Structure formats: C-alpha cells, structure tokens
Length: 204
Image (tube, rainbow, N blue to C red; front, top):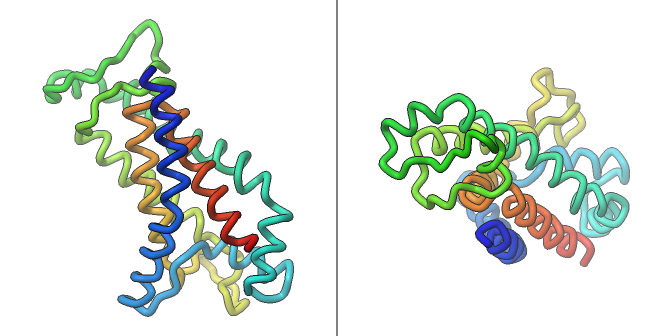
C-alpha cells in the first residue's frame, strides 16, 4: 500500500516539479550570473548539432527520448539511491537502532525491504541526511562531467564549473527522501515523470 502510494506520489511530484526546477535555475542565474542546467546535455547537443538552441534541443530530445525518460532514470536511481540505501541498512542499522527513537524497521530476513518498500518514517536519521546530501552532490556532479566546456575548450577535470547543476542537486535530495520512505519505485517514478516533463518542454 505504502509503496503504491509512493509511486503515485512520485509521478505527481516529478510531473509538477519541472516548472519549479526551471524557475529555481532562473533565480540562480539571476543571483550568481552563472549558467544553471546540465552541462553534459549541453555539450552533447552542441557536439551533435553545432549549437544549443530551441530547435537543436528539440531534436536531441526526440532522438534520445527513451534513454532520457526510461533507461537513464532507472539506472541512475539504482546507482544513486538504491545502492546507498542498502548500504545504510547493512552498515549503520545497529547504531541507528540505539540512537534513533523512530527505530528503522529493518527486516533481517528481507534485507532489501527498505530499498524496495521504504520504511515509512518521514523523519530522517542522521545517516539518511548525510547519505542524501552525499548522493545528491554526486548526482549533480555527474550531470556536469564533460569532455569539453561549452566553448569547446577541453577541461582537465572533466567538470564544467561554469554551469551550476542546482536542479539536479535539489531533485537528488527529494528522490533520496522518497526512496527511504516509500521505496525505490517512488523515486524512480518521480525521476521518470520529471524527465518526461523536461522532454516535453524541450520538444515544444
């Protein structure tokens, strides 16, 4: 029941989150002067079509729709949410049981229970907060790894520091919370819905 509600809520949250992400990115650009967004995608569009504009974004979205809206989200949620979640349960549960008054519901006969179904506790533990921030940072960083920056100059680090992946960090935190409370179906559904909404914007 909880997992099913989590999937439905994840879809609703992901579908409605895109306008919030766009507005947040616009504010970051206004406040910092730095370009927000996804440097990896910007580079891919420029390498394929020569420049980044509304038409080339539409072409990229059409050509890569399946990977953007299905395979990419599923793989990323396994790597950035499911695996760290299992690590929390496997390595920090004994400590959490002693210090956390909410007592994480770990079923020792089904160690993947919290990963698949969530534990239903809305108040996060210190371990969950720390892992959420860590994985959201890695998730955001991953979206800015490029072979070149936007101007075509190769970067030794492979990270475009002039593009701020604020939306990726924010949704990374949200997806982490969804996974821990409602299970991996919720955050995966939210990611798919969020990217699907983004593709619709790109295809306009």
